Image (tube, rainbow, N blue to C red; front, side, top):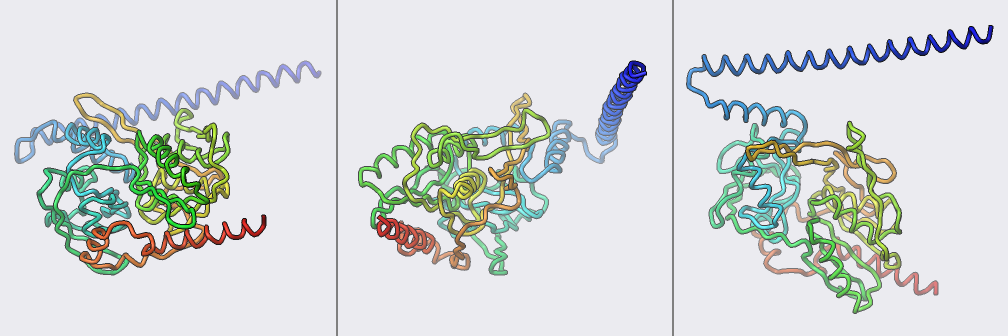
Length: 407
């Protein structure tokens, strides 16, 4: 009886497996059939446009336009890059190009500034994170793609670009005339001892040489035997993921989870762990962030916050927590495609949510006039006028005093 029952169970399981397999195969076949029908629909529409549209059309323009629309429908960061745009991306990764110095995205359907890059024409003119770019040279940006906006702002150094900005924090429209310059990105802008042995490093982006340059800065500062470190990530839009991970690993024990990504496919999901052989663990730290801190900056800040390795000071970060992969297509074109999202070690999603600081500092410079902002830029680095830095200095001074008293 037991043997018959076992045989029946085996046949039932086998039948269920076959049924599920057939169902899955049928589902996949339906998906493919639907895809072929949709492609056929696209082909028919293309044929009708070419034969009946009022003016003669260029097939390349039609196909490129369709690809741009298709990628733009996915999310704010995915895009189709034509030959010119792809070449511009290659130039940008070298760290030198002609433009205004603005990192932009599409947020809530509007062209939005992630951050102005420091020491660039846009930064000196007073452009702020979260500014909405309403017009570029009197052209409304409502239906403009990221690619088109970048093209209009980049170009020959010395030429002016007119931007109409909506600054929602002030509830007013602002006009800016910004002259393009040669944008040369330095990953480390400042590196010095401020007071009472507190070291300060301003990290602007995560590029190929950032870890090497950070090590040089830390080695130079170590000669003065610092008692604490302020790492300034304000207006840092991110950059290379692996570089952000490596730099984070310099300040937490080896083998700790820093960030993980999750995508549709298993191979798009990764876990990134700290791997520095001699991490800096005995130096009290404060990390500064604001609404212009994005992507790699958020990964670093979130990990140090989670492991209680640093106190995070400032404002909520931007919330760009997704991974884009550039996939060449041929003929000099490429796709920039979102393939996965970032998650903090405790499973929090960064995308759209950002990093909440431990100590909030309100930015009172958001309403400064363009003239005031330019004057501040000309004055140069004066940390005593920066309330973010001074809050970190006061906190680290108090912490050092408390630790000294305990000894």
